[in-house]
Image 1 (cartoon, rainbow, N blue to C red):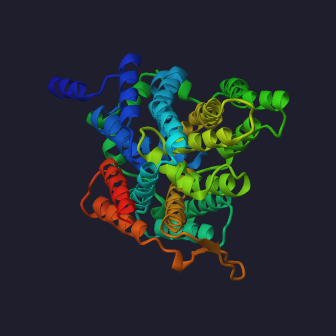
Image 2 (image 1 turned 90 degrees about the horizontal axis):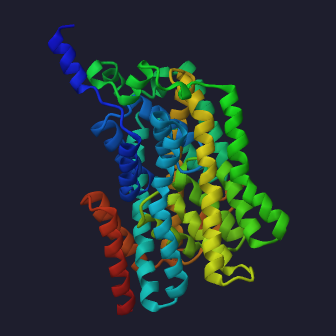
Length: 464
């Protein structure tokens, strides 16, 4: 290599950021991370891969596929993963906390406004319009993720199968994800070309395309990213009590029937079994929170998603809204607004604390398996299945937004939820169609569409 070539390569190589610089970038991402997981992942890809080259394309996709496999919000877990890679546990904590803190504060304020002013006719009309826009937002997010995940017919078939399994057969969500992973593992052996997770990996090996993380590995600075049994045991010993300790304490002090105990136990269980990110989680949580616990009704669940869509941070912050309403309506002996705020805080804790556990515990092993084709294929298949899950959620929302009555219809092993056609709300259908046209045809942003539908909802309600 000539001196000139060496100097050009060195100039092109990205430098490792300081913790302060990384903190500023994570705060920027936390404040601007609108648009659900698809938008958040796209923002992180732009900031971390394309502009700063802190992490390479192939490692970014590998980490994303691992986070898609985990229960919980994949975008926040991806932030924790990258922060942990570069600055160990402290970096992961900063990245993960800054990703959710701005949105959590906004969501708490919106929840307070919701219970105080929801019955005001104008506010009710605003939420009527927002519900219609939410349907378009979910469909648009599903299409964006599908363009990244459904690269061939095998991936399309997996997505369709996941949708059919959930909508027609009502199969348990974890079972669908497990089956998708198994299909991917088998596919890596019998049809490897169809299950290749590769992206732009060919570029990553060239010196001018090496990422910060690649160079840090070469310099031996990422010892924490190598598997260690002792480190794994220490992680479990710290994070399991941090996560579940408050729930156990509530059970001991308040009893199993206390609403706070139920909130802590329910969302702790959701943190373990809800795979595939926010859109995948919502249909599962909505069924349990609405039908089993009676904490809120289906329309309020859609309202909560509409609020979450207008805030930065992960969409799973809608669970904070559910926890707020559950405690606000619970017989706690506290002021309802205080109880709701405590319920929201408890929901946040048990929802997001395990996210740090999953990354700090599993990421070193995932890094070690980065070249494992079978694992990569399984994760790729799971990502494809999540597209089907999101479309099932879009249909669930569509039925409850557009129709006043929905009922299950049983045909042998099939049990789909079908609408009562006479209950169609033409105003909601008109707003939803306009929102989809705006987002899909004219590429108008999510926030303007939500605002426009809110205003249109008020005008339609006043006109009628």
